[in-house]
Image 1 (cartoon, rainbow, N blue to C red):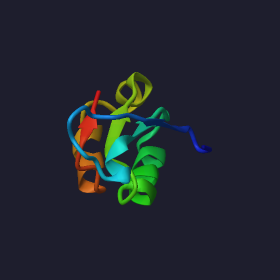
Image 2: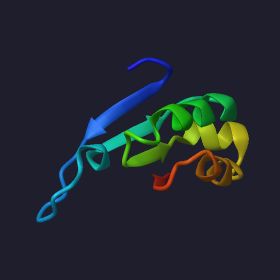
Image 3: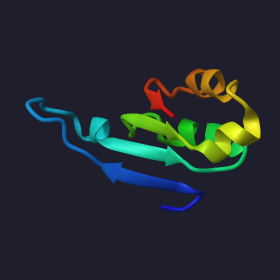
Amino acid sequence: MGNGASVIIFEKRGTCLKPGERIICALDVDNAYKAIQLVGLLREHVGVFKIGLELVTATGVEIFDKLRDAGAERIFY
């Protein structure tokens, strides 16, 4: 996948997940604009967004709130 995003499929044992809930999108980009743009494009299709160290270092921890405002319901760092 282009634009610095990588997608990983995962299974949760004992639970039936919807297809989109199985996808983790790694936001391995270096600025807030790119990350917010990716969340906007993928929020309906991705279960979880992973925030990379590069993004947090470049933007600060404020990025978590910005990504939630852009539609990232589930995130991890």
